[in-house]
Amino acid sequence: MKTDVQNTNKGEVQDQQRPPESTQPRIYPAYEVWESAEAIHLRLEMPGLDRSDVEISVENNELTITGSRPDWNVNGTVLLRERRVGDYYRVFTLDKTVDMDAITATMKNGTLDLVLGLAKEAKPRRIEIKTK
Amino acid sequence: MKYRMNGGDLWPFPEIERLRSQINQILDEDSGVCSTGLFDRSASPRLDVVETDDAILVACDLPGVAADDIELDVVNNVLTIRGEKRPRNGVDENYKNYRRETWYGSFQRTISLPESIDADNVSAELTNGVLSIHIAKREEHKPKRIGIKVK
Image (cartoon, rainbow over all chains, first blue to last red; front, top):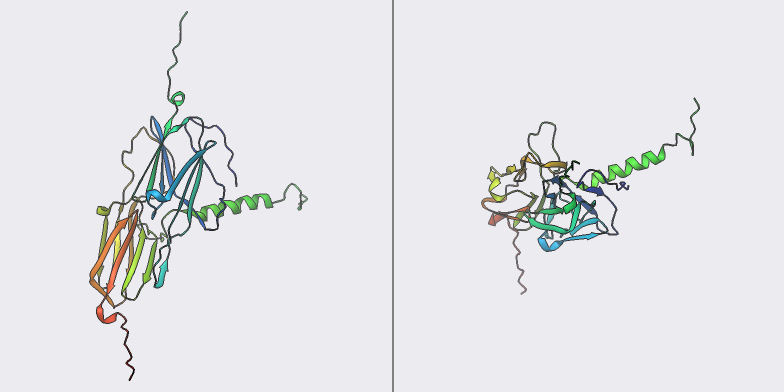
């Protein structure tokens, strides 16, 4: 299913899903998105992944986050298996208000935090009204 | 009223297809919580349990949970993992929240372990949001290979 990309409110990050070509089952990591005065904050939960396992790329206004979760290789009898194995994958469509060069990412405790800086023109700007 | 199928206005399948792909996406989304029963007050994070020759290994997905917020105990061969997943820091009134699929709050899982475990020999570590617990078996329950002598 494709979500229409449209310019909505300021800074809104649109979520767009497109299956990647992969043989591994894919996992859409759960995320949280919020906006502060100067940036959009994205937090994705990707337990089991180290900083080096995650790849983030921006292309044509699309922010793609991928990460392969290593299988839990233990020789033994599996008694319970609830955790997902597969490739994390999620794509976000960014609108023009995000400054593509001001994206920072940190990974801690299995959560990926992305801070997407807002472009200058997207920040609130007061317009003076001239009197004649 | 005439009900027209097959290409008619009431052809329901595009809608059903759309619904199906939405449901599939929901199933692929990883909320991190396995199940919450009707009367559960706490979330149930996902668990893996593997038994090896000399230990029982448990892995639990707890992304974003600090080690200090996790309590772990073994009482009467029942392992309990409980704790609190705290919301993100710096929640500000001025923040605009757009979407949240993650969960916060208390969580708890209990698993019954076999008699063979050694409750005094349990270790746990938290790496990249995954809690790994190593529960050793008692010596007398570990399989022993008996050598056969050839005369």
